Image (cartoon, rainbow, N blue to C red):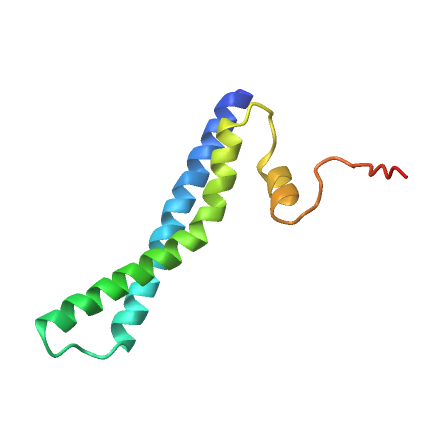
Length: 107
């Protein structure tokens, strides 16, 4: 049976693989969508500019989608306090505190 550290490593590797797949999926989907819908170039300069814009937009979309998930993975790996992926997501992205908190109001 796998130890807790081995299970965490396997989960982290699986998450990394999933993130890579997600990143490439959005990048290629955006690239293909723009390539099919932007007007065709008439000169070499227009062709180069069109390709640059398509590549830039595909990278921006891909990075925007995957970066929030990469933050979760990186925080989990480098944080000294053991926190689960779901607890971090709940506390960071959904605004739900991990532990009940008490607000003290002083007059």
